[in-house]
Image (cartoon, rainbow, N blue to C red):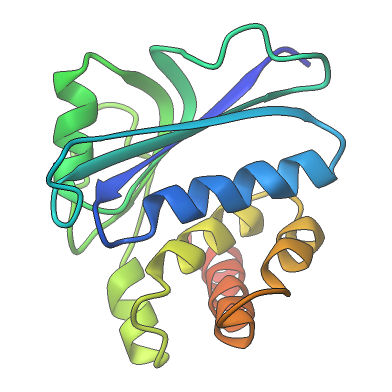
Length: 172
């Protein structure tokens, strides 16, 4: 396997960086070499945020790429920022309530924010989203559970992860 990449994009306050960091830690627990970085402007809260993870079975040669294997868009501002920077992706998952699921490479759309709110997990949309990635086979659910089982709000994070995995397995 060569290097793989995941882009997570949204706005400040959505936990984009936390989602990417959680993915990076889970991939590290799966014995991958991992690099995780983020990019955001001074207007962090409400402004576009991009975070990405590059991982490989061998050492990561460069923590940057212009083309991602998978992109996860939690808000249209993140999608617009990624396009403005000329980034590309092979596949994308979007929150269909906040991102218009149009254009090439938008392959799955879920009402992530709505599902989190209905489940009483508002503020955990980022974890629902990475649960979807786990449910689709992009990262090991057990590794994500291990990362999310510690720290503040761990019970709700684990509920949000489970919700995302259930959504992925029952839809599309």
